[in-house]
Image (cartoon, rainbow, N blue to C red):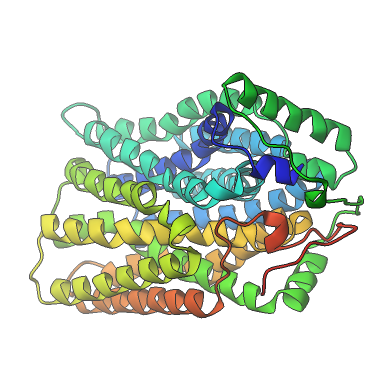
Length: 476
């Protein structure tokens, strides 16, 4: 069945997968963008009267929720299936995000931002697992990177909405930001339907002894492709993979298997996830404060600068994502990580010298994150395809959690503190240079430890632990 899925051409079914599952990142991008843009409004005395550090704390708490959610729901997705979990996690997000719009204090907002983060964190594990297991090997890299990149479509929606929602001439100061928290839940209702019609992963079903159900799903996908005029070549018996049912693994067992059997891959996944998490969370959560405090951009005008920034981030995965399947994973990961790091370092020196304004600062960010966005998406692709099927969900959760704790959760608060009252540029410049160095190191590690996974079946990259006859595995 895995070989039959991998030999499929691109069909309408695969578009359904993208539409149904890509909604997760649109919602995540919308959530983070809303907080980034309303952060300055929440510092107003007519709203919650927060400090810049409080706004950074909101980002950190949301990311902490993502960590906890990834671990909990990642544990469940390897036990209950991909489909159940990507419905449960979406509903968790919808409810919490909507309630956050009624916040009357910092603590109220922090609690429900945390719960919303739980849902989105769970999305990362269930969605990446499902995408990799349903998309043919030939298209897996570009699809995963593009779907992860749709995060920035959500950011664009948030940026565009903020132009109107934060305009005091259109809405009261204490009303517009609240409406912003309701946009995600409304869009999420559409995503629930799109996901409901998607099937369970046949690969997951096989390892849980549900072969007949898996066969029906694969046969249905093939029948739909044939109905579209596609001629499918038969798959030789030599490509068949026999598996036995295994008992679910704990996180302790997952970590032990990863560190014992895949040590270099473990180091690769950790390095890629930590470096991109630090860069993104540090800059994305603070760029609104930078524009407002250093370049005196009014809160209701921030959307004009965020929108092109989001466009650059979205175009990166969409335009160069296919190169990860053609040129190859290692070359493209190193190129995107290192080039974006160099550009960030250059922009830091210009910033310190006072040579930038709001427009040129945004242009720098657009170029930097055109590259960094594709690289960051490839980090999620990497950790989801280089480990065995039975622990895929937990592996994604484990690396996501460790990377966010090590490189992400503290970054928004740290950079908020570096901005301070904007009386000096030196502290933030140092922060930018550290971010650039971290990202550059991630690119070098990907070059030396990366796996040439392009075009390969998941079962060839890492054989299932339950395989009776294990295929040849790519070098670790």
